[in-house]
Structure formats: structure tokens, C-alpha cells
Image (cartoon, rainbow, N blue to C red):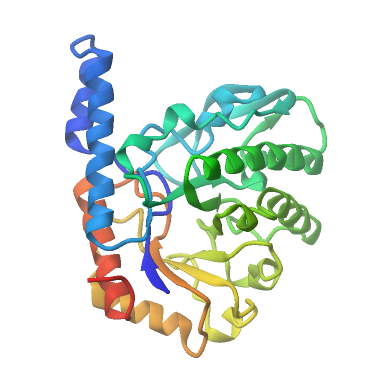
Length: 326
């Protein structure tokens, strides 16, 4: 299977931006804002379906950042002060852990545009990895990074199970911390993998394909460690990584690959031939169980028109490699 898909938060369209500003200024009703969210998500879903993309995202248009729904919806957390989101010109509210973490699995309900995704469509959802969540939070309760990561893993697992019951058939765990900056100590990598495994193990038996998407750093050195995860697909930010077939061969033959070739932080739109050639160079003699062409990270940093064109180029490249239905 060769396909394409989105990997995170998409930019809002111009009409939704105007509606949001009008609502903030008291010039639009809540009903008008809700209609604008639904229309914008619907337009993005229609684009994906028109391109032949299998696993469809609603664009996560209501998400202020990757962690916000959980900081607001889980027990034991508070949404803290604004902090810089890695080396981007964007910010997130750092979750503060003030008590034992608890979740009933319903934190994402208010943030999903379920009505924008027709029945029968394979729906894709994105969750933070438990390691990234722990690293990006301020712990005032557990006092032990491993215990915190495992508590987050348990709560994320309940969210994933709830998403599957809602009809989501693909769950991506986003991991922006593991490859970012200097190489992590071996015991820290082991802790991260244990927490990720706890969140993802067995989700396939419940009906979902899973992915760990590693971005904002070179994932190549981590591939041997990622090989044993109970995850279907491993995602690699190709703007930061340059894996060769030898390094990719560390992944078992039954693992799929998600190659983040379209730069989610650069407004230059890659051509389909360029994307397809990059995928072929990376793969060489490696034949993964499945191949997904995707943005290197969330595309919320770009104008919507640019993000849509990048998605179109990814789908065209997947088709040129023999995937997708015309």
C-alpha cells in the first residue's frame, strides 16, 4: 500500500479565521462560529477524499496546540503559561501536573469535527506520545519521569480506545522530543519506548492501525530502537533525517513507513516528481509493509492554500509510485 496523509494540526482557512475573529469581537454568534468550523473541516475532508487518500483527518482545526485538549480535559492537570513550541514562532500552554492523572477517554470529544467525516471513511486521529507529553509538561506531583510517562500513557490509551469506538481506524502518536537536540541517554530512550508501548500495544486488535511519528530531529539513529515497538508504522521527518536503506533495514518487514518529505515549515511547495524521487532514494531496496508520504510535521505554520497544495503534491507522488486510486 502506498498512500499519503496529514500528520498534525492543519492551518485554518481564511473564512474560519475571519469567523473566529468576528466571534472574539462579539460580531458573530456561537452558532455561526460552529458552522464555520464544520465547513472548514468539511472542505479539508473533501480535498483528501478527492485525492484518494485513505486515512482522513479533520485537520485538528480546534486544537490550539498538541497538548491543550488534555491539559483542559484530564484530571490532575492545569493549562499553564505559554511556552515556545520548539524552534518555531508558535507557542503552547505547558501542562502542569498537579495531581494523579485521570481520564475517562472523552477529552477529545469537543475538539473533533466528527460530522465533517462521512460514515464509512477511514478516520485518522493524532495523539501526543507519552514521552513528549511528559517532557513538555511541568511535574509538580509524581517526581519521577518514568512514573509520569507511564501515567500519561495510561490516559492516552483510554483516549485511543475511545477514538476507535468513535470510528477512527488510524491512531498516530506524535513524537517531537525523542530526536530533538542532542542524543538522549540510553535509559531515557528505554523509558520513552516503554511508555509508547504501553499506550499503543493491542490497539490493532481493537481495529486501528498505529504509527509513531518522530519529527523535529534525525530519527535515523533511533530506528533500531523503534523496530521492536508494537506499532504498525514508523514515521520519519525527512527534512531532518537522511536514512539510507541500510539504516531502514533495521525495521522489520512487517513495519510500514511514513516519510515526511513535504516540509511543513517551508512555504515552498515541492513538486510530485521531487517527492517521489526522495521517497525512492530513501527506500532503495527496502520494501516496507506500507508507505505513506506526508508532511514533515504539522502544517499549521503555513497558509491554508500552501498546505493544500503540498497535500495535493504528496498524493500525486504517491500515485506516481503506484499507490492511491485515480
